[in-house]
Length: 365
Image 1 (tube, rainbow, N blue to C red):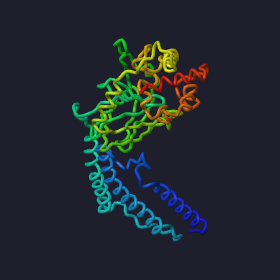
Image 2 (tube, helix red, strand yellow; image 1 turned 180 degrees about the vertical axis):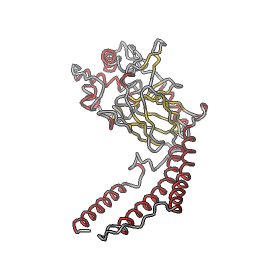
Image 3 (cartoon, rainbow, N blue to C red; image 1 turned 60 degrees about the vertical axis):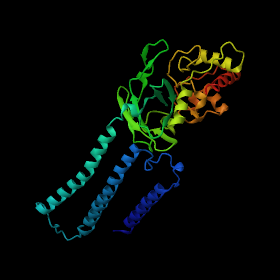
Image 4 (cartoon, one colour; image 1 turned 90 degrees about the vertical axis):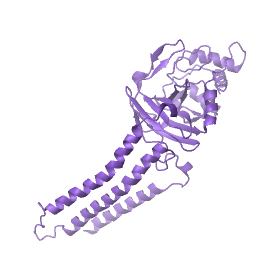
């Protein structure tokens, strides 16, 4: 090997070592690694992690063995300039049996727990023991419907601990309108591929328009579990976040009771909230639903805002609800704040009108 080739090889090894070192860097606290799939916090994620812990060491051993044999063969049997052919082993029955049987045994060791885990995770929890949530992937946010409770949330779901949550990834969504009729989602023809992923609770599941898919998640402990869309879906793919709040059962029941309430109406009053409610009816009800609003049409092209002020974040879970200045910028021109946002700008609204709208949104607890 020439000096130049040795230098190139050395630099390559150093680069590989540096990459491996940087990949291993990170805090030891789980709060510093909220998307760590190797720190499962539920039985579904734990079953997948157990399978990974079995397969990964086997794969590492096989990789080292195969690469070691390749390196040995390259060095041991390299052309030494003598013109002699190396010894041929074609037709060696023992070797052929050996390298057929060993991989077959390895695959069998991997296949049995893999197939078992697949069937285990593919089963649906009993109806009377689970929480059902319907998921619709929009651009670029998640809509969550609690069909048994009768309300909607956006980007964030609250679930009781130690309870299987059966997610219906609905690619053909329909909605019941205030008059009792059912109509398809107005944006159904604009739905695109997404991938639902909350790493510490379960693996990824594709969201496919026109198809119904299902995923179960479950949390062992109370906490806030972070997730993301894991399928590139457009300009704000990285701004399409998921938040799962796991709480104790009694706290969950209280939350359900609060979310089931209609918003307060200020019709006929002379206040900022009343003016904001009127402005909402003029500008926003064609896309957003607020249960209890006098002009409500039940349309959910955008997120359901009935309890907007009870959420910590909005806009794909990237903006702080309590930041009035940011909220004003969002109302005025959301595509400028989040690339690809489907919400139309409102350049004709005055600062006072936007303040009134915010005053109304602040009542939606």
